[in-house]
Length: 142
Image (cartoon, rainbow, N blue to C red):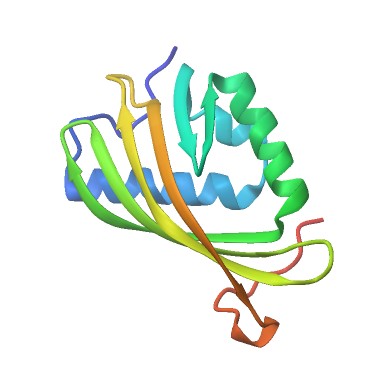
């Protein structure tokens, strides 16, 4: 596999670059694009679901974005050291009934030497909100 810069060990600048790249990819809502940032044998915990490998990542993201409509995410640096980055995040979405949610939490990331994420552990809480309470506005993906 080709290196996926920025590479560890991370500085504040390179950690911020890695976070922005992840935010941009996830906001594309393209499971295949997102999965390319992870090792072939990546390990995830997402809420109570455990995911292993890129193929499971793609399937998980397809299910996620079929359920979480008009998804929009914002990630912020929490901490970094060596080959690890911790982020805080918020995202908004609605279900097929039109109920809006704000989901927020944190993720712990661990990268391999080539800059691919080998572990992602996410703790997430969902809060029902009114559409008028939304923070993030964007155009619907076509």
